[in-house]
Length: 322
Ligand SMILES: C[C@H]1O[C@H](OP(=O)(O)OP(=O)(O)OC[C@H]2O[C@@H](n3cnc4c(=O)[nH]c(N)nc43)[C@H](O)[C@@H]2O)[C@@H](O)[C@@H](O)C1=O
Image (tube, rainbow, N blue to C red; front, side, top):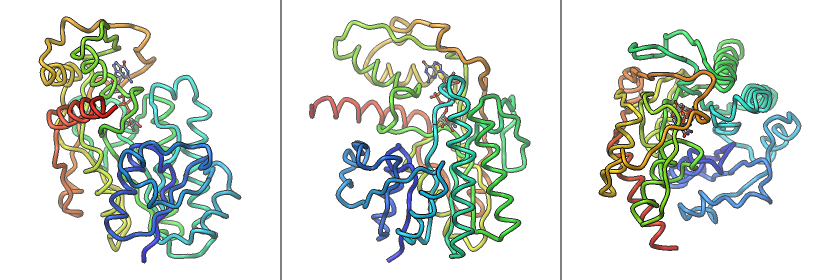
């Protein structure tokens, strides 16, 4: 039975990846900073909490990382841990840099130390590219990050690449563009919009306050993206891949689709609030995921419209159950 350790199992991607690996017959260890205190609500929503052996691991702490590897003896390690909000990274730059860059380095060092053929996946981010204008970023596009989060992810990306070259580790980074699901917290703009539209449709009197709605992103479906992570680790050679749909749309289009799905006209319900603007932001994110298609036979099943509708349906269904 293959064994996988997912660091950051309580997040959106951690939960979907755990589900996928269980379906593939893995023994799954779910790492979380404090497993005793975490509610693992995402795992519960997917009804897999009972199938995962959870472990406490602080990836900032080398001792904790090494001990966890020695105890769980994984064949594959997925690093999905670390501070994941770009907005919050402007408020907590040090915590962001430490949890992402030092955390990734600790995992790489610990894997090297164990001297076992452990395959490593690192969660990279399109935030590394910064503003590429209308250019579709691929694996050779230079990084010019515009957030503390993007800077930290860029450092982690190069650490992974260096350990692959210097020590022949099977270590890959997926440079993931935005990917959403019903497990997204409301801190992220898509779920914030979905939740507000559903609440308004249910008769709650409220106005949805948003920052810059002229930005454009490549939005995909998180369950599709965790599949790409797994496929990367099944390759003979480790490498880095851009994972995206290849389609970019404006945030205002996402808002329109969500409000239309619940039968409302979005323009009557939103207000622009400058407190949600970031000191620096990415105006447009465009991706070219051709390498993933050609080498991994991976492509996104769902584009923005499908993602928006599925998120609305899931939110309304959840409400009915409560
Ligand atoms: C690839 C990348 O993807 C995600 O990071 P993100 O793109 O920052 O995601 P978000 O949903 O917070 O913002 C998207 C855009 O929407 C704008 N925006 C407008 N108004 C609001 C607003 O009210 N709230 C938020 N959160 N954003 C707003 C905001 O300024 C930004 O331009 C993470 O998974 C990250 O881990 C990751 O790697």
